[in-house]
Length: 217
Image: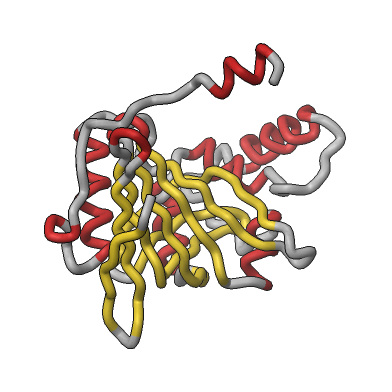
């Protein structure tokens, strides 16, 4: 093993801040997530709503990227993006996705697997209208995931749209952009513990109810 590889292998953190027990969790995993999310915000975790969204393309390869959670609903977790993007095209063909939250400040992660579907036009319109003006123009300007010649192409398009909408107070949501909802079938709450003996509490949705079980670390 090279010296560089030894340095990488030596990077480790002993997790000892908290513990997680079956008797301490709520019966509903979305409510349990809300509890942990509130604690992450209170702990001033940087962007606690940042999550890794994993999709599977037609070629069978998984693809992951960081997106931002925008709402916690009783039925799941919502985010917004371009429907024509790589992830949008993947979700149009394969509805099974996973999302992952990692909050190192609390030594916690949450893994979620479930089905994804588009949010209603009303929900997408409402969120789009709440975005900063520059973000709305950016969403319209960017042909997300497509190859472009250079950054100037994108900046020129933003300038054109900024001029076009200069006299308009309302910028309508483009039809190719909107929200998704991930409805979970499986959720795991992971709490780091000392000597890598982590606590892993899993919820599995079976026959209309959530089953709670412990997984070995």
